[in-house]
Length: 73
Image (tube, rainbow, N blue to C red; front, top):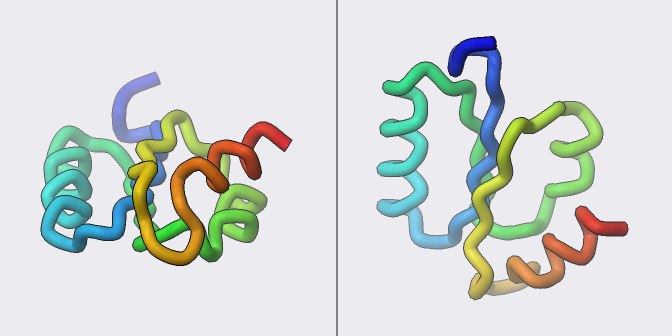
């Protein structure tokens, strides 16, 4: 399975960094979804099968630690 079949979720509150990661991964052939914080995570992971989730830990509203706990549960 090549990169074109793999989906990555990036959760990052710094928009320039989020966009840079998104563009680089798309250029490498990955399908990329993004969130600015952990809000909206559950509906997104229920609809998608992500190969990788890249998550910032320190974010406003729903931080990365809560995201990790949610994913574990």
